[in-house]
Image (cartoon, rainbow, N blue to C red; front, side, top):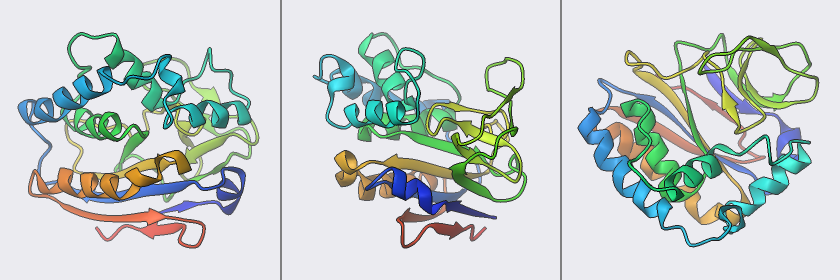
Length: 231
């Protein structure tokens, strides 16, 4: 299996880099271990001083990206902004599932989107690129199957949408489950967050090492846009 980024994605989003990691886990983090990660990150994000949230230097460019994709901010939020908004409202951390909590902690700590795919889910390789139109998308959390329009920027497998509208909403295909042991992690790094690229790669490796797993990480660029799984 491999992950690739179409060259027109780098053309349309100048300066974009992708922090990526193939991760092999003998087990997932326990609930307590994940809590030790998400708790401090949630508190840190809750103290983010920008007001409004979307004015933060690392978050503001995402509004421009989404506008460029034709997505109104009132209906579509990048995943990292949605997480930070919830943290700013206070209360206990959002807990989804231990492995998801662990990589959400990275997103909150570094203020970049982070997503993951269970590698037992996708059909064939994973690609970040434009849709032809007609590809199915089945959203997590319920809802009817949808159909992508031509030209949407999505994460795709051989014939389906895995994450719709770049960093907006993930499908059930590739969803993290209790049985997940092989994952692909990805963080989208815009120029305003360039300093976070190497720390995110270290975070990916540390997540695997914390449970005795293996990781192979790489920063993808226009000149290095394909990354094959070693596992």
